[in-house]
Structure formats: structure tokens, C-alpha cells
Length: 433
Ligand code: GDP
Ligand code: GDP
Image 1 (cartoon, helix red, strand yellow):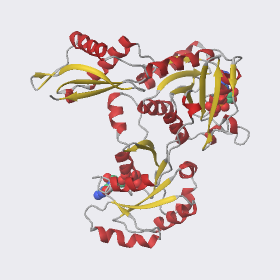
Image 2: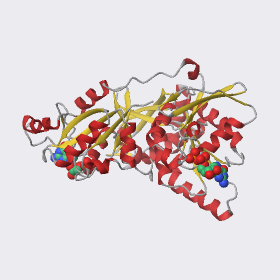
Image 3: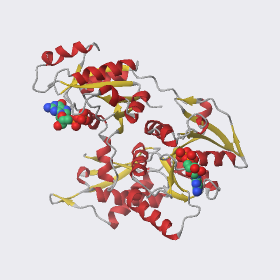
Image 4: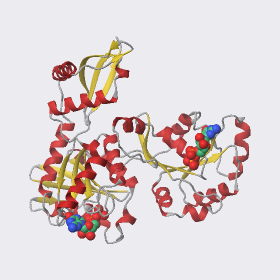
């Protein structure tokens, strides 16, 4: 499971500025997929091979810091965090609000690092001095807008993060499917339905990592692990789906899986939260199967509305199979595992260089890349740069100027020619020689 770093502090100290700096990949993704909703609160940060979840806890109002801290969302993020970065504003100095927040954060017993932001224009020693009065040790000094000090800070933080545990050998051989979706979409019902199918042999697993439960099961020769974000096994303890829902656990499950099974609620319609989750799945590069649940009993008008909403909000998931299902009655559920298998097989397939290069040549012939400053962009050859998700590396000249629309055109050509249903496909463009 990915470690979690939460950014806390009063409003305006620079949390979202730091958040954006740590999770910048999102911008590229948004540019590539028009219409994708941004989620400015949760993201994935990277330092070398280390990946972590970053949470911007938003504003904790200065005056009643303690009360505001109790606000459920923020509290949940803090509960789930491995490390708290407590942001302070060098220009304001230590305020009463900071003292309140420091007191409540200390009570959590979590790793806590004070970070003084906006040190640009200020002498560092001056900036640091008064923050010692918080009693939290030496503060780290950064300027989030220009990135100063941020790398050093994150190196420090990453050395303190818990080691990621390798999945057990037994579990490596299984296709790991994360069942994700917003509260009440029907995840628990679906998991129970899948496990309840006739040919399924489920094992009772104590494999609980931070409340996200792995459920291994077999269907004939096929071996799977469901990653349950709905808390099926905890159902008795917490009844309210909204209370149980955790975007952090969902992000961790997406990272840990081979295939994401995104459950949508056809009755509620497709909303921003669905698009946000879908965006995280694509960004993580995971194979995907979409289940539009609660299809039972919808009238023609409702069905049409769901289809329209899907097009509008989730159009960027055009690579994924969509199953209309009823977890409650079982219709459509039987095909989900097969589709997940196929998606994972595609995600991990080997793509030979001659085939990729020929497809590239065909694509270029059918539709030339544009001219840039009077010279045509040249795309010469292609090879596979990675699997799961498949990465196709294209070599040429001026490739950095290739428009997003042409990239999408190439992705679509490759996808349909190679029959890569179910997996995101990434292009990497290289220029030179
Ligand atoms: P948040 O409310 O804690 O998320 O704060 P924001 O990230 O929205 O930042 C509040 C304001 O402080 C914005 O105008 C930022 O541009 C500014 N800001 C953030 N980091 C820095 C910094 O390192 N130096 C300076 N001078 N301004 C900053
Ligand atoms: P979760 O929060 O995503 O785990 O959602 P649950 O599985 O707890 O389901 C939420 C509610 O939706 C429950 O009342 C379920 O009975 C209901 N539900 C789940 N699947 C279906 C379905 O296929 N059709 C209908 N009509 N209701 C469903």
C-alpha cells in the first residue's frame, strides 16, 4: 500500500501550491484527456522509485483550529496519513491558529514535520527562528511557488515512510482486481455476488492491510484476488457506506491492483466523483473494466440519460469495456472476470518492434503529422518501452511539437490495430539523432 502524506495548516499558507508541485503529472493527463475533472485534493507524488499519496487537507480555519480539525474529511485524512506536513507561513510568523493546530496535530501521535513556506524574499535564519517556539523541532524551509527546498524536504520525508511490503509470492500469481466506486454504488453487493457464484472457491484471508482487504479466490484454473475498498468484511461494524468510503484507500487499491473494476450507480447517474476516480485509474495506468450497476428496473429515459452522462463525463475511458449489470440480481456479473482477464492480458502483452514500426508508418501515411516552423514533424520508428500499461516509444524529429490531437490519433490507431482493449496505452516521444 502506498504511504500517505497529508498537508495541513491554516488557509493560504501554500498547501495547494505545494500539492500541485508534488503531483504535477495530473496536468499532463488533463491536457491529454479533454473534459477530465481535476481533483485538487488527492494525488500521487513521486521521488525516484518511491510513490506516495499526497492529500491537501484544505483550510483549517485559524481561530478554531481544534474544532475545525475535527471536521470529518480532514480528520479522516489525518487518521490515514503516515506523515503530516504542517505548513506555516514565513511572512505571518507563528499565529494563534498555528499554535492550536500544532497542539491538535501533536495529539495524533503521527510523524509531524513543520514546514515554513514562502521563505523567498526573507532571510532564512530569520524565517526559521521564531518557529522553534512551536516545539516541533527544526522547521524545513521552502518556497513552494519556485520549488526551493521542496526536493530536500521530500527526501527527508521519504526516508521516514514505511517500507512498502511486497505482495506474498502466492498472491503474485493472482490477477488482482480492485473494486472501486463511490459510496453506495454497489461494491459490497457485487463482491458478495461474485464470491457467491457457483464455481467460485473463496479463501478466508487475514490479509488485511490498513482496512483494505484482499480476498483470494479461484474460478477453475483462474486465480484472483479482490481488493475490497467497500469494507465488505467490516460491514457489521460500520453500517454507513459514506462513513466507510475513503478516497485514500481507493487510491491505494488502484495502485496495488492489476485491473480496476469501476462500479457506477446507474440510478444516481454518473457524477464528478466517478470521473475523478476514473482519472486516477488512467493516471495509474491500470487496466480497467467498468460495471454500470443497478441497471435493473431502469426505464428507457433513465438508460438514455446514463449513456449520455457516460459519454460526457467518462468519454476518456473509451478503451474500457462497459458492462451493464445488476449486482443485486446477478445479471451481467458473470462476464466481469473474463473481461478483467482479457484486459490484464492486453496490458501485459509483448508488442514486437517490427509490428509497431509498421503500424506507425501506416498511421503516418494515412495522416501526416503537421508542419512546425515550416518543417514536417518526422516519426521514424517505434518500439515497446514497457508493459502494464503498454508504453510505445516513438522516435523522430520535433516530436515535442506533436499536437495532443495527433497523439490521440496515434493511440487510437495502435489500440485498434493491436486490439488493446481494456488497458490505457501510453506514448513516449523521443526526438533527436
Ligand atoms: P492554501 O490555502 O494553504 O492551499 O494556500 P495556496 O497554495 O492557495 O497559497 C496561498 C497564496 O500563497 C497564493 O497566492 C500562493 O501563490 C502564495 N504562495 C504559496 N507558496 C508561496 C511561496 O513559496 N512564496 C510566495 N511568495 N507565495 C506563495
Ligand atoms: P457500496 O457502498 O458500494 O458497497 O454499496 P452496497 O453494495 O452497500 O449497495 C448500496 C445499496 O445499493 C444497497 O442498498 C444495495 O442493496 C443497493 N444495490 C446494490 N446493487 C444493486 C443493484 O444491482 N440494483 C439495485 N436496484 N440496487 C442495488
